[in-house]
Length: 81
Image (tube, rainbow, N blue to C red; front, side):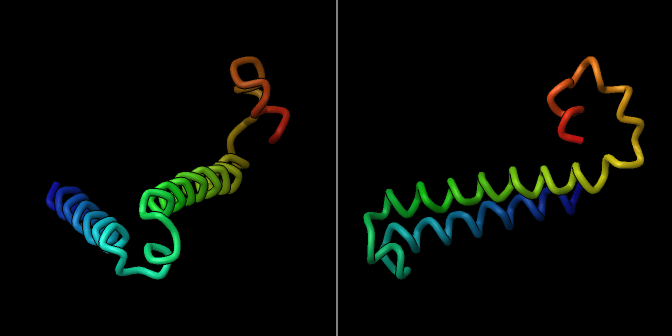
């Protein structure tokens, strides 16, 4: 429980620091473009990266699983695997 609370607090702290640096134009991208655009670019990039990493993790972690179990419930994923 302590590690979860501690890591969440650090995540929130770092997010606040980075967002405030962007909106106070203390970063290169904050100076070059509008702060809201840099905000959207940062969070869009993070969302994209999390989806790519999640897909990579599933490709690495799923091969030992019998894929026929998911043939009817997840047909698109079954075709990809």
